Image 1 (cartoon, helix red, strand yellow):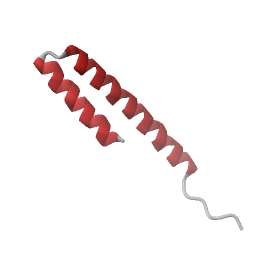
Image 2 (image 1 turned 45 degrees about the vertical axis):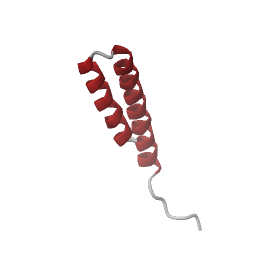
Image 3 (image 1 turned 180 degrees about the vertical axis):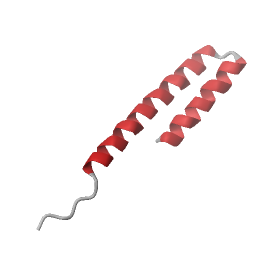
Length: 55
């Protein structure tokens, strides 16, 4: 998830350098959403953790 966020962030930076404002804004928005989703998934997995099976 974070890999995709970094990819879209790089696309946004490159598009911003070349002056494609619409593409840069959209790619930055997607990168931000993917980063937030990744953080939420990380926190959920961290709080659940590995629990021994119920006997």
